[in-house]
Length: 334
Image 1: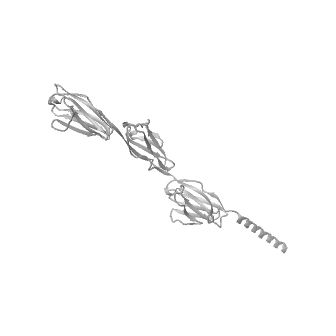
Image 2: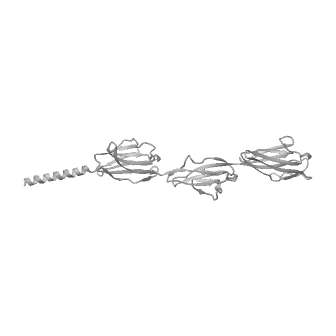
Image 3: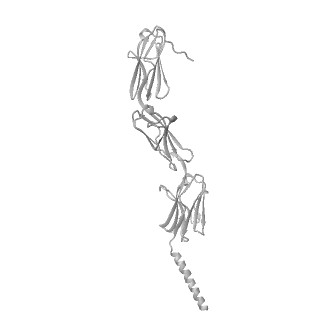
């Protein structure tokens, strides 16, 4: 009986050794890693990495740059953190060989790829990774259009690009919901193309980026359109009696702002006891100019030319002053 018991003990020891040998010959592996995480700023994220047959190997949590622009940062080794950050903590579950990395108060800079490494040799490891995505409100990228100065008739392309998560949608609008040059009050897309811009298309355009996170981002793009002068007058023929004053008004639209002169019989007029010239710019593109003829004399009847010039061209309009028997009085002011 004693001999049989001894034999059973030997078989038991051999069986245990075989199990241990089989176990020791199994290759380490990562059996589970947390799936992709999408978090808001200020949230908490937990990433778990479960290993098998890796008791004798070092396990690391590494923050890796998705675009590989910076070097990876090792957060932990085994069951210990090696990065000093009060927002980070590490928990090791020995029963399941699980390593749990926790990040509190998530910030935009935490968005990255987090890798669980089991180091087998100096230059050999097995890895699995989890992506942490942080929802971020839109922001307009620097390569988007700012202000523009263009010539009338030119092809204009306004570009707007934005970052954030989820990817923002881009829309275009004009100030006061004015109609866009391509029609409609809104256009979606990164590039707003105006085939042949006109002076009526000048003004402020809004690039709006929205992704449902916080308030959208907006950039105001001012477009100035250079164009040759365009002149309009309330009347091309005016009457006034002798020895009464008369105002001749001329509206000039142009950009860049033009040089404006008044001519009579080919001679440029200036301020003196017979004439008073004034210019009033209501905008960068619109100027009202007035020629006042003081105490009209007989020799002052005839044609007066309002002339405007800028780098893109010249325009002129003729207003004729004729004599009347009854004075034309200016309208009464309130």
